Image (tube, rainbow, N blue to C red; front, side, top):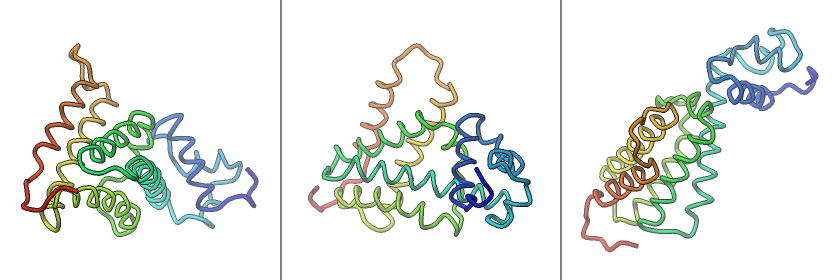
Length: 188
């Protein structure tokens, strides 16, 4: 890639190539510059530092996940929508373990918009259960924790017992969905 082709988006593309091939630890400014065919200082015209690259990578990963989730849950409601949402999250981690591992999990102002897109999808699904406000936030945290935990453990090879993982995940989804607080509002 020629120097003229550098931009923050191009740098993220290069960082994602490295992540996909080597994992998140392979991303350094030197490695990105090497992929771009430029000296490391040339990157500073487009990004401040490696922390900004990591933030931009996180935004891209969150956007990819949110786009896939929105696509798959569109037109669904209730348990069917939550099942689909939880499936797309797991499948993203399974298909892109390095990208998911590179995603910054801590709440940061720079990530609020991208993270908010994913959270908004989940909160919209939970409204179908009559959950709003703090109840919806609690439920969203539970869903996120369950899916994230299962998918990360699975991607790391953390389940060694000889029982089908898909069956385990189906049970996890049923437990989470059946455990949602009951409200006096009808389900949509």
